[in-house]
Image 1 (tube, rainbow, N blue to C red):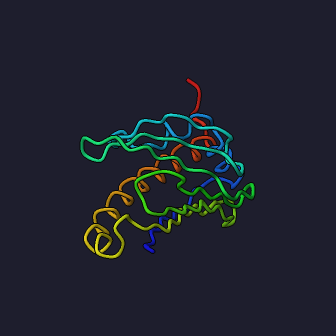
Image 2 (cartoon, rainbow, N blue to C red):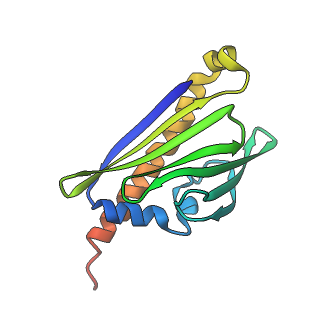
Length: 156
């Protein structure tokens, strides 16, 4: 099992960061524009049983990815797990923790690649690089949106 983690301190309350993740358009907002991903559907918000479905391209090959939320404790965490997709397994925990008036946002992923250990040894660096790019973008966008909600721009 491989692991990836990204954590950021957001200058906004847990409630603001959680509400941001509840937005109906959150997948569009958090998907980096350079990623070859099409969002097919999102149903159920952050609650257990919620579904997100994507089509991504690995080279010229389209791959369906369906993730289902398996755990949710509002303003603390939610978990999605791959039901169908390119990974042998995928468990993604989105953690929200109060740090004074700020929120520590942590994405922790446990995953394995198809083909087992030989493929993981060969491609681990590449997958981590893609995850790092994606979650750097997601955390930056989350920070910008949530901090803007806290400090709205002055009207002219």
